Image (cartoon, rainbow, N blue to C red; front, side, top):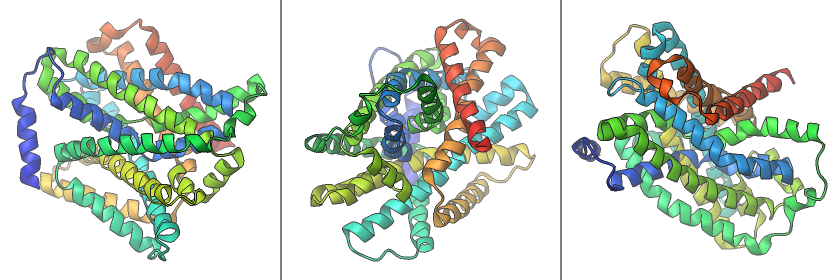
Length: 426
């Protein structure tokens, strides 16, 4: 497997320097890899959280989805591209802001991504456990054993190398897109109005703003693929040199258009099928929308297909986020002054990830609670605010100053972070 991963790395190196004259297979691989990282537990819980807010907040969030996702990830990509050749996000922070700031941002970067691995560990265990119990009618093994087996399986894939993970994720996206589209279309005959029952009454402005305020962190998390942006930007710079920003923006725009269209169609299909009371029940059961739908319908096809789709979505997002989380943890270790061998550092990282993910998956905390209080707001500080601050302060990013999108991205980031403070105080 390592030989296979190395051969993929060699093909990537051989592509240097590329031109913008044509769209390459590797560009498509990255586009689908970005899509694959974003579509996971957040997406599968988005219909629940967004639907509980009512029709009008969901409609506003749908309008904001593409600009919020594209401008933020483009800003983070530009930030990584502004550093020296081959520098990842933690090294670029140190290059621009100094050693102390670099250590702080590396710490935040790790804590922005690592909780997502914990969320995926819980979601994966719940999905497989529910599938065994409700679809296969088999008593699941003890939760501690089930979660350990699942996480060990994913870490075995991780050992194959970064580029192998990206290629595997891009290949998994094809059947996943088809399956998600099939499920959204399958639900159409079952549309009963669902969330439209809340559309006849316009919410009070204060209530609407409050709902949007608390929903934006979940929206940020649902479309987030910041953990893979660092590796994406480094590869674009290696392949396209001075054209890296232009091509990376093209790849990002296509990836975001694909994910926004697919996700919103799926979300609206779900919330038009299930009532607000049923969405609240799904939240109380700590299940993804797919697992709830599988238990809700008597149709054997949907009962088996939905949990399998959820499993693929969560598994591939776990792999994509592991790249960013391991990058952050290794950066923290190196900033302590210790320089372990690369293989030793990989083993230490994998052992730490396994232990903590296993403990949290066994304890089974609320997934939506983790998203609201950990995932979305912390990600916002790295994804939305840090690149905007760099545009103001770093000479290498001065050319991006004065754009209206900068104000929009900053505003969304501040909303997400203040929502975190509110949730702690409430």
